[in-house]
Image (cartoon, rainbow, N blue to C red):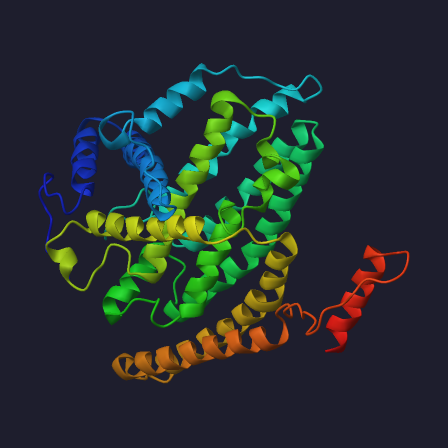
Length: 421
């Protein structure tokens, strides 16, 4: 249970400042003005977190990946390169912004601005503490899924308006991948909703606090589905196929230059930060940490968990290769979707045993965790043996080229020898 935070200056509950201002306005003004002021304060608070954090994360990501690749990274602008993101932003602002002559000008200029809308709105339902959220919606999970789907429309607008085949192909790739991986992400969240019995984002955190457990231990496959599906929706490694330079140049923002291109990059980082925060909220307890939130500000605990998850995204980008589109789609439809449906049924069954039959959570939750880990392991083994792409079989003896066809005949004999062994 959290210690009471009644004073406005108590850093454990930043909502006290907002509450003090709105109460002061409500004493002399109408109620609607206090409600609007509450929303404005919350929005400014979210922007105050996103803005400086993005500048730090740009430097951090470049520095960490450089270390992973045995490089130094930014080290020229400012101490240890801390001002490199500012220099990059100034460079992009000073660059000339060009538009293709045959592009649809209005539609071409809108996507860099519109893509910021869902990136900011999803922060509204993220709880930074027991009473610290811009809008504590009863259907916060549904709001999150609905808002994240707006990106598909903006990406298609950007790809189509440029009148460029590479940009259009890149947009089509992103849309196909995003729509496909939206299903595993939704299935992973539905499993949590079924098991906890609430659609509220803060309610899921409160369930973890009440049962003294994080959902990562109970639903590991749902966590993996949410993590990998989010990388596909974020267009990050290993699912950054829309930016495969050797195939389609720079993807759906090929013709964008200057700060418009920088806005797409900034939104990608903002979305990665938001997904890291929501992963920490859904699977790592959010602002709660086994009683530590009584003494440490809850928002600081959430930011620490968010930073940990953001490092995981950086780690994936610095170590994994890019997958092909067919590999990504096959992995989604042949593994994630069937396993997600299985865990949906498992979550509903375990919820029934826990609530309807009155099983003791202290005994039932460890049993459920063991069962779910076993199902996840069995699913991985079955997929690896049946649905995964077979390894290429090489010939066990050298194959010599004969005849006038030379290389073609050698290739055929090589293939026959490989299939016959």
